[in-house]
Image (cartoon, rainbow, N blue to C red):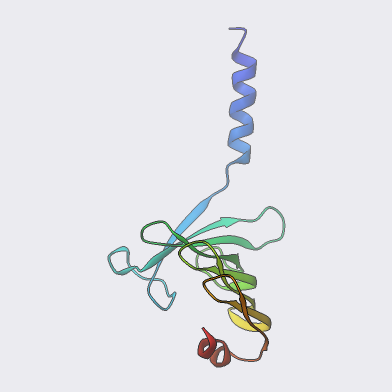
Length: 131
């Protein structure tokens, strides 16, 4: 009985700190798809007070391939800096997005970690040709 207040406090703290996490399945073009057709999946969770949502994208085997923020809770509308990773965990690129459109600065790295290119992005076409 003497542990009851402590247990209640711990339960209240864990309940309060839990955040909802949504899993979405993505095809090779990062579009939502059915589980049976997915190439990767994204975990979307609510950010604390910014109104945006934290996103981590993984391959089927659980390897992290990208991290960033979404403007929407149910799909990945890229907002801000999105960092992509090679399968070994080294950074592949950092691209700034605004409502899913590249805008601002984009940086790219080789798999060995050496910086490849830093560019001012103007369009999705420019970015796709460099990846």
